[in-house]
Amino acid sequence: MHWLEVNSGAVAALSSVLLTVITIVYVYLTGRLVKESQEMRAAILQPELAIYLHPLEGSPNFIILRIENVGAGPARKIQLKTDRPFETAHTKDLREVGIFRKGISYLAPRQRIDHFLVSVIGKLEELVKRPLLISASYNDAAGKAHTQEFVLDFGEMENLAWIGKPPLQEIAGSIKQIQGDFGRVATGFNKLHVLTQPLANYNRSIEAQTLAWRLESLSQEQITEIEALVAKKEQERESIPPSDAVGGEGNA
Image (cartoon, rainbow, N blue to C red; front, side):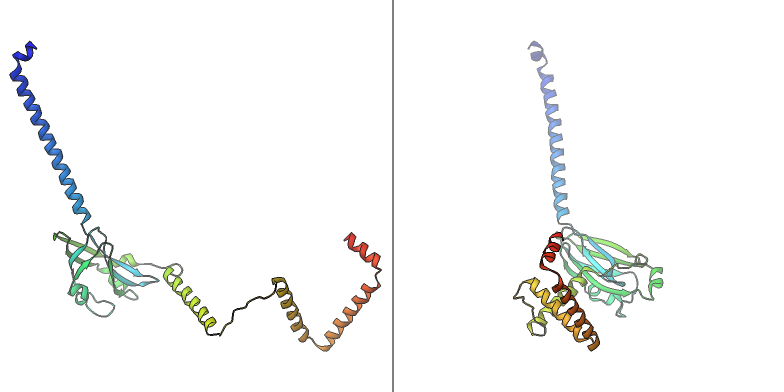
């Protein structure tokens, strides 16, 4: 206690220094936390454009120009430019297409726009020589401007091929077939078969009808031979004593 009384001034000064240091550290950490919160909030509203080439589903020779917002925020006032004239599949300069001439006013997160660009049939060697450069400028939800550049290399489209039919085409074909089947049933062109007897009896009647059709296709000589064979079998069956027949069945 005597030491504290003697050095009370120094202790007070040291306590003030420590308190000042703690306050500075607290302010620094609080500032970092606020800055990280602001960055996270900005990242949530941050759009990000992706412009790339994509083959048409089921037809790899037809190339689509896809403009997609892969970010978490909306992109506004999108303006697109190319580094040179480029003739599209409609023999029109890409710079005269609506999305390049007028721009895109709004692109929501995960929204995309597909534009049929070009067919590479007979043109791929020429397209590969010089990639296409597209510049994009746009604003985020807070009005901040962003710019990006995309290099579209047609060499990436070489040796593309689809294995099997695309799923959407298979689904469309199946739906069309089902629709046709229902249409034939509804119009009476095809009738539904409803069984009014046991399935075993129905199968036996089908077999008997098939046998009758086969007999009708035989000649008279073949029918006579079959009748003689059936009569012979009937005589053999009648000549067997009942006891032997029963014993034979038991042994069987």
